[in-house]
Length: 289
Image (cartoon, rainbow, N blue to C red; front, top):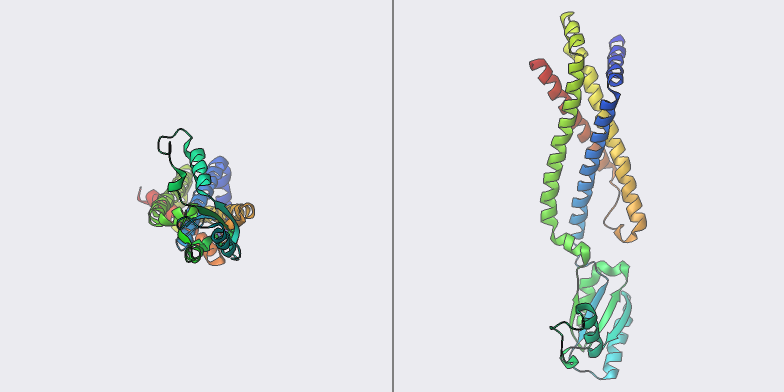
């Protein structure tokens, strides 16, 4: 009991001797863990949207040939009654050409003198946000309607993220490795400086027969404080950030969520392991040196 109290006294004494160093170590640990958790979220998001066929809310359905007005009205009615559809707007050939001029500029040589007759009539279809992830199935149903020649849509930003899943996974692994090395180095340097500042005291206690566990326990406990405290602070910040983002962007709630309890516990244990590893290497360096 007395030894435990003395170890804690040594711990607090060491922190009081270098308060700014301890504060900067904690902030660096917190910041690095936040990066690691955000990388984890990024990889998880990419993995989830990998199964999403499309995430845009607009598609264009091209009409086959020149159709009579009643056929156009019939196609529009069939599309409009679909539960997933928010709105349907008919775009005649001339309307399509006018849009091209707006997008590309009226004097663009690619459309200068273009005859509207070569363009197809089309429907601009808006999908309800709730069903944006089902756009591939919706486009197939619309493409099966008599009079529709082709249906096209953009994948949307999440669709492109899904296509880049492999690159995101590799990049995330590289960043995570860099962060892990940085975390261990932060603790190593901090504990190393602390040990050097008390070298004479440690040497005296060692000559008096003090056990190594007693001599170096304060540094292991200090590293553990950084590991647990930094992990909890980083988790609190990142969880708050996720809740804030999803509250302002409800569409992300299906793919971005707070970490479950198992991942939280794993991150805390992982943080403790890295902090103790850094402290152990600093202690071993001191003993061997």
